[in-house]
Image (cartoon, rainbow, N blue to C red):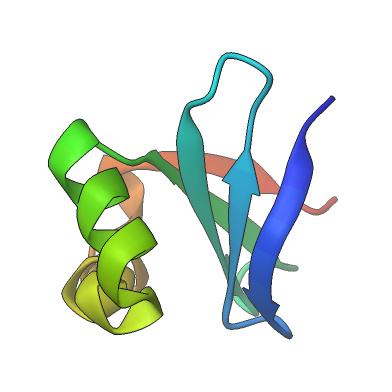
Length: 76
């Protein structure tokens, strides 16, 4: 079962999957609503667990700007 371990409204959610991978989800209110996903690489995961969400801010901004290069799921 996937567990939400951190979230800030629609800005981001950090998900922990049963295989112990971590994924970040960013929501965008465009084209009827999009969820953008990125599986954290091992270093991102370690940094997040040690220092918190602040270390992922550049990744979040990149996901918002270049969302088409990530896994995208439409809300429709």
